[in-house]
Amino acid sequence: MQTLQARGYRVTRPRRMVLQSLEEAARPVSPHEIQSALSSKGGYLDRVTIYRVLDLFCRLNLAHRLPSSGGFVKCSLGEKGGCHRFVVCRQCGAFQEFADEALCREESKLATGLDFHAERHFSETSGICSSCYELRQKALLSAEGQV
Amino acid sequence: MQTLQARGYRVTRPRRMVLQSLEEAARPVSPHEIQSALSSKGGYLDRVTIYRVLDLFCRLNLAHRLPSSGGFVKCSLGEKGGCHRFVVCRQCGAFQEFADEALCREESKLATGLDFHAERHFSETSGICSSCYELRQKALLSAEGQV
DNA sequence: AAGATAAATGCAACATTGTTGCATTTTGGG
DNA sequence: CCCAAAATGCAACAATGTTGCATTTATCTT
Image 1 (cartoon, chains in turn brown, blue, orange, red):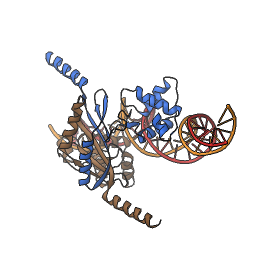
Image 2: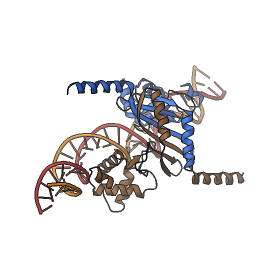
Image 3: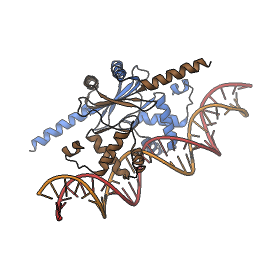
């Protein structure tokens, strides 16, 4: 919340509530899920307010919206260089955020080759996290056993 | 449409219409825009049908959905190796599709380092195309002249 | 070329996402 | 404590997306 203060934005009840929701979520959450989660704890926020808060958070890089699912997550990298990227497990929804400046340079160079001035990279790697991978291996083995 | 045939899907009126809409569009289009464009030419398609056709096209890689805007475009790369990526002009919406296997390897390696088995990369570079860039330069110069 | 049939569409109903304008409330500085 | 700017709540609307089911249609078979 210091970030808000420092950049001239007010610290309000809705902003605190949304930030806390994002912190408590183990995976990307939709605006509607945020509203439901809050109301199940007796709180209430207007839908429009939630959109506005999320927009602000994304502009300030306090949160990100995942390209493919559209869900929102709290940013875990702060001011780390390079654009912020994600790996997401298509099975369980677990995710990790990372940044890599070399990758950004590479992508920008490719854009230059296509006559574009790159400004920002949105990217998300979809795959399987190690725990889902292990579960799947077990399932496959037991299926074989039954043949 | 041979692709549909070859993969065991039927060639139908809605599928032909949506494909043509995508071909005629100079930029990513939304399902709603597709429906409007068709109806302005006297055609009609159910909204649900449009979603289903687009889903199918995306599964078959005949079309893609751009991560940030959610708009759809016809695939221009066919079976080219590596996942398909986009550069998009944030000013005019112009875009180019490309693929780069080295970039995919790099991203997959990073995912491995985070304990994920990468399967697919979604990525979009946002920036300014060369013609918008030139327009902007001219505008800046004339603004200076007026001071 | 007609008929069977599996596939695809159209329709109805519903839930979520997203946008705008305006009146009211609240935050933070003086 | 008061005030002005900022932010919220509310109303109304438009687009996105999903499901189930009855009807139509594309393709295969004969």
